Image (cartoon, rainbow, N blue to C red; front, top):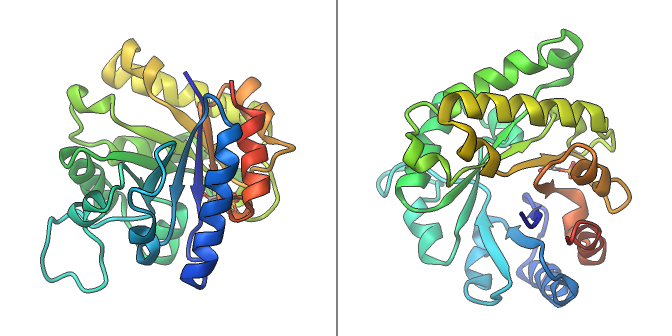
Length: 250
Ligand code: PGA
């Protein structure tokens, strides 16, 4: 399976020009990439700028509401992001959980809605520093996974991408040790196997995210056997982002 390299720009580009520059740099660099699939998730205000602008690079949204339309001031709907060319959507990022009060129930509604809309949800999971210290990593992941996928039937499960993002590693420069990432990978695969069977467990991509750079990315793919990476900070620098993709372009 070719690696997935997902860029999460978060709310960082301040102007359309800044966003266009990062996009153009990434698209230009993507010509060097043979197999890896690049997915860019710009802020929703700028998504429309990039609709249909690149074939090789796919577009994703950073968030969505679960309702098709209606009185939900400030929200972005799946119908809207799909209409402007998004095929992927990040769901349950730890910043959404922590800063915007997203619960597992809300995240589950988004996952179900995205699947019903034919978009691929990238469901983010991960423990906080405190939960890790208390030795609760696997319990937290199990809980987030079970609640996040509640009601997702087998027929739809093969459309899901998981992203393991330990909260303490996001934007901190602290990288998860490869052995922990590998243990989590095995744990998640086992949980998916129990829920949906081996075929789906083997096929479901599991990404790693949290302070990924070009000098640490390889171990997450080679040693921890992740299917790809979710990149925040480093995705704002197209050169570094493409270097990351090149490292795992096999
Ligand atoms: P980071 O963010 O690469 O800046 O740590 C990753 C993420 O939040 O997806």
